[in-house]
Amino acid sequence: MAHETSQTPVPDLADTAAASRVRRSRWNKVPEVTVYFWIIKVLCTTVGEAAADLLDERAGLGPTGVSVLMSALLAVVLVVQFRTAACRAGVYWTAVALISVVGTLISGVLTDDMGVPLETGTTVFVIALAVVFAVWYRRERTLSLHSIDTTGRESFYWLAVLFTFALGTAAGDLVSEWMEFGHWLSAVLFGLVIAAVALAHVALDLDAVWSFWIAYVLTRPLGASIGDCLSQPTGDGGLGLGTVVTGALFLSAVLALVVYLAVTRKDAAQPRQTTRTPA
Image (cartoon, rainbow, N blue to C red; front, side):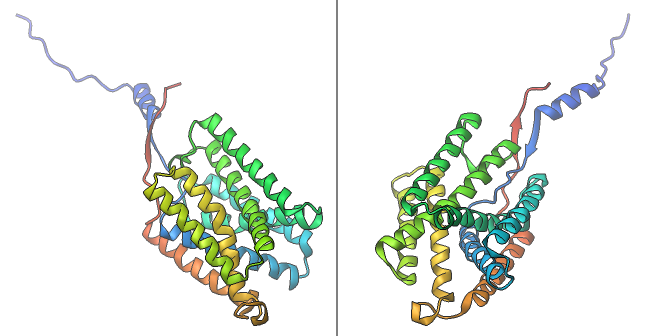
């Protein structure tokens, strides 16, 4: 009588490789949106402006020189950001600080150098941002900040961030020009509008994605107003600390928070399991 033996099949290496391609973990390249995120975002706005003003006034580079230098630095940092496998607090927030300067400079070139009215400039940046979102959604079928895990989505994300800073600069200047608010009242106004957006998200179920981007635009003029409150002369309604001191204070706060997040990883998103069809 023949005895049948049960044999354990040897795993096929090709099947194993295929399975690895089918399911893998992908890291989100954007930090979790926590209170730390918003604090650093506001601080980065002032740090970026202070750095640009310092290079313009003290180093004598002029607007063109500052634009070229900041754009080159941003390009280098973005290359590093794109090449990282996961979100790294130091790289990410350096990119945000530099892109805040470049976005502000774009708005300045349009309104100051080219003579485009603030109303027109604001409209142009609204349209540009809307186009980015439309193309982003058409290609990726999502605008979720929890799925910035491909080169395409990350490209759309940073392009949107650039236009939010340009739009925030133009819109903030437009509001200040229309209402002629002082620095303190401007800061309070933008803070209240951001609070209203947060309340609408929590109480009225305003879409999370749109809530985020509206607040993201508004934090730019908020940060600029807070920076002006501290840096501008007392005769102009500020505390007279100056651009250098204010920038140094904000930079110290940013560095402390970024180091804390880099060590604790409190803002790091967990990897997301994705399913892909084997080639």
